[in-house]
Length: 555
Picture 1 (cartoon, rainbow, N blue to C red):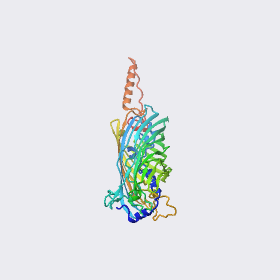
Picture 2 (cartoon, one colour):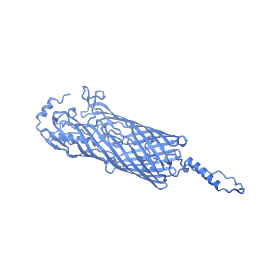
Picture 3 (cartoon, rainbow, N blue to C red):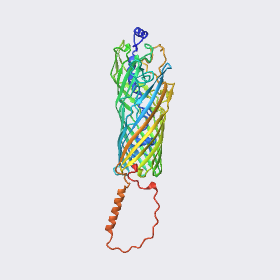
């Protein structure tokens, strides 16, 4: 492909003074690549909720959390678990595609996104220290994120190829995203719960978000005056942006009311300071001659991305000892993220033609996100005695964090329905094996009203000038999305919840009583008259029986 056509070269040579915004915008646009991470869920960061057992019951676990997953769903659920250790991991197989319609109304080749399957792990430990009114828990876990990878070049059939080779064109989604390689996120959690009343548990915890965000994106430097081809790859710059380390604290609170056949749970997660940090920006300038000799000095910018308040509520009904039915609702206030604040730190454009040096100022990137409401319904049943085999199933629905006008290949998200099922098997007295599967149905989108513009280097345009072409919208086209998730986990139960009796305890107690009785018997006793026959007592209500120690979480 030629560097530029002759007419464009002549226009460039006759121009007396290139606009300073050309280079300034490149630096701003490089920073703005952080503005909308594509690690997407309802709300734009995660695909679904997390956890192997919760996955199998529609992520409805706020009221019924009875293992270390309570560290994520409701810290008040820590009480009644005794001593437990959980190791689990899930994997997400995401499939997405985008067939873009460009600014001229042309259908471009369909491209496919691949989300590299990576384990979504958790290790959690809960201990009540032998008390029946207190428990604490610690854990390390990862949210269910999907790191999208789009092609750099495609042929006429939409297959990936090297854009530097003949017959390979620049990928049509490049102005939204190339990839998120190098991104990672972990939560370190510590929480405790206390029961001031036998039926009420109060929990609180601290979540520490650790990790990094990284993305690579193409930025156009075509101003539509000097350059008349706004999607000409000759005018593309490539920016690699990295925000690391991310270290942000979050506060978590929960309540759990426990009745004989009903549990009601609520919890809250609040991020008081959002995501903040210094982003590193590395820019490869376009190959067009206008940029010969220009360079960007400084590669740091202060970035702030607001995270939402998350509220959960759930009601679990236990009609029998072996059956649990839970309905959940959660709210995420993503509408608080209207924009992303970016403040470059001593970033300069150096040696620009006819300009010299220019310092880059603060910028705000529009996001216009929406609040997200999720509904979940789950069922879990013990089909063999003593939890030798438990089965579960559930549904979960959530709306998209973006309307169609703001949807792009960077923020790949839509309304979604998750259908999951799973099983748990008890091995011996101490170990449970958990397995779950879920399919995520995501609403395909056809967008014709995109308001997301290709970033233009000269903004505003020179006084009195009228661009020969209109704005370039980068979100129009057809999107398809779906995902499969699988998970495996193992739970170890040590000391039973305080106040519950094990079979061994019962045997030892009986032996002790018998020994005590024998020691206290006199050497000779008078015959004792026979007592009248006693009618067998009515069996106790199963919901009031003592809970066997292996019955996880005092279920």
